[in-house]
Image (cartoon, each protein chain N blue to C red):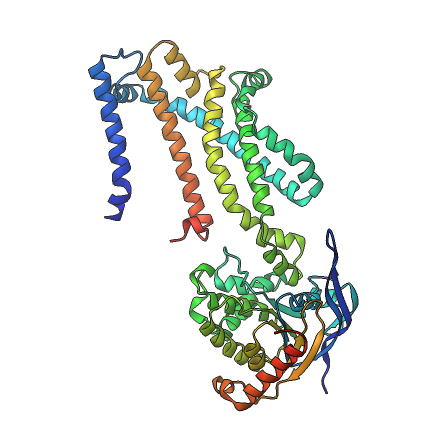
Length: 258
Length: 254
């Protein structure tokens, strides 16, 4: 018995421009079930980030219906049903790491003892135990992004929205962060919607990959990734991993991406 | 070693300039009433210390009064300007234009308003001088918050007030401090120059202008030395406060 965490029904988005309007998304239908890890994959400009922002109520859709955790996106945002991780860690320079993680807890007006306890718990979860008193600029890019993930998870949200969170990291750090994310996902059972333009990243992380066509973005196909869980270092060497990589690639090509 | 490296060269330059001044005045035979040698200024300063220091303290109070008043008003104005777009768009250009006006020219007028010997006449000039840089910088600091940070706060369903306290205000602090560094200098200039237009007999500006009028240049210079020392001390206070309050800022990271 699963429930729908994110429901998209005929969602479209058109940006008004000075000279011409730009259609970013057309008729997106998608249902993401509780506990899934779904990647939105597509070339730059296909509207995958816009779609994520629509789910998070950071941008309104032009048409269609959106439900998040069974509510309108705005209500879900107000109820703090989701945590968001952006491409840049977006940490507040003037706050030490622990205080950055505690930010949403402060916004929610939790008592300070409770805030501290939960922020520490999240710090341990992302394995940055000794860095609570550091300032963000004293951390590497990968560590900063881990702090951002801890912050997004601090409210124990039902849904985690991630907008190319590892896009700014080097390849080695990126693979390490993917492992981290898998471990965290296993521990928290949070539903994740993950935007990326990396095919191996999408295949390695996801239970389903939503392949999007170039602008205007539509769903070109959905690839189930039935690789064994938990995903581990060896998953990338699994023969099925390559099969799935190719399947996603073919779907992208079918959508007109070379 | 690093301390010596940091402080050595400026100290040497300072001493060299003083030595050159001393030697040049003595060798060229310039009259003492035009330019006294530094040694004479030091001697005079020691003799006149109690008078000059009291005058400096009097003027410092005027400068600080105006500085605090102008800063508080500037910060409040910045809050209203960043809260209501109408105020920002309608009033800011006017503020920027006013900021370019030579406000110290108001001194004869405030002297009439409050009375020449009333410190309020100088504090008002200083407050108006300080108001503009504080207001303009603070408004910028409250507004120049990256869109990414605002979206983050929105994703957490933070209130307008929460975003102000947790993002806009800390973001504005470095802007406020750079305004204060300018404002500190302005406050002493404002108070002393306003006193040149007339003021209490206990004031530093009055002391300097009177002694210069009597061609007692060593006395006038010792007043200027005290004014400079006060300016440097205020600057130092601001720098220390900055280190305490915004140690995270890129310019202060260790």
